[in-house]
Image (cartoon, rainbow, N blue to C red; front, side, top):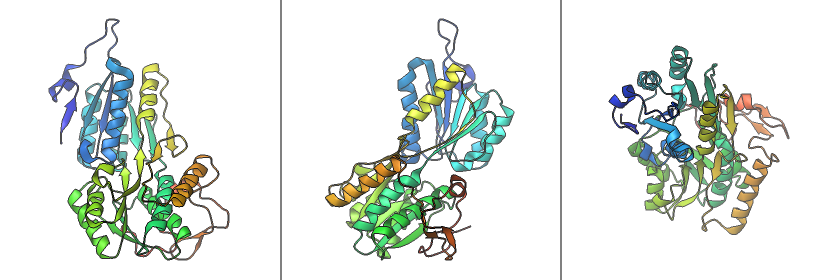
Length: 357
């Protein structure tokens, strides 16, 4: 685990910060990342948000991050380390940090915490996430049009609701434009492991997939797609540099505006515990540029879907939709409520295989 502060070194945490002439010290903002900042995916984009804070506030802030922190006991130790060293605001940026964040927050009631993708809050703990499933609806639409084998491969990390929502939304969108489409899903039980992700991509290609989607953090699948001459999508960041011919589009996580706003709230003394779940409309979930390899009419229809979602005129989960076992989930015209989406633990009808425990 690598540690970085603007003062460098773990000892700097105990030394405090240099006060301004008026006696005020910089607001200290810490981040805990599940992967390396160089993953060019999830953790990379969170770190871009951290850098946006520095650009926005200059020497009024001091930022710190801990990267590649496993979800478990190490997370609790890392969060406590930041809390005990005088941080005013701490962002914990992975689902598995939820309970450790709550535990440390109880011990440090004067520190503000923000947990990404979780659902448990406290007086000093907020939650936030992007509606990534909206982006996967757009990408699924493109994938359904672009596959020639009618087989789309999907590399999945862990069977938490966020990941299951993404699979279901992508499948429904692909199925709508290509009734013959099939999804092949490989669960890798990791957020970031380039070797496992590459192996999963190769396995999916061997099963006939000519389009790869993913909910893991490295560009390994994009690199394999480029080598094998098939298509893929960027995850969390654009990833075009890893597959200039393979990449069709991407989901880009834009955390900067949220991080700036929440830091400002701490500075102003207006910070309150809240839940934020933003998608395409507010810009927290962005759709990357469409490749010229996508036919013009498909680019236009994909953009129309993104625009309709942003305008509130379309919902990714609109009935009729059945669960995998054939039971009715959403009736004709009915849309899924947020509570169901936040707890989604089932495949929709048409997806083969079972969700892992």
